[in-house]
Length: 188
Ligand code: GAR
Image (cartoon, rainbow, N blue to C red; front, side, top):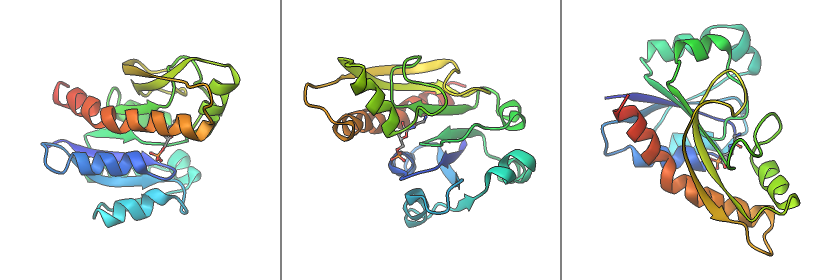
């Protein structure tokens, strides 16, 4: 049974959806790793009985604590769900082609450093785009530039606010992320 570790930094609605979705499948989320002690994802994961490890940037980048813990728990794949930090080279190497991210835009548009969460939707609206969407992609050493696995679109509407657009994009994320990750893992 493939073991999934989720990395998240924020509210954690995608993390919750992934955990729930895999409950009765051949995959399991064994731990959530979080770099923000105040993040909503912590309570969400705990409520679903998934253990959480909170870590600092220094621990991730300047020690092998996190990678050691993943190896000890025999994590097979890593799924980023609103994780706002780059991963160190050692982790990319250890999990080459086994780390998946979701980004709330149609990459390569609106990706890169500083482009996360609501900032993405603000930029899409500022540029008067008529469509946005999601990109599910493999993770490499740089922000948002790994191989795309899946994209789908949604319209940007006349009177959209960043929050309204975020909600529309979030529903695409809930609909597709668990499914696309599962297909990828099962065919790996
Ligand atoms: C999601 O929309 C995700 O695509 C985005 O952050 C949000 C997290 O929401 N990720 C990025 O912007 C990564 N660059 P959540 O915490 O409710 O799942």
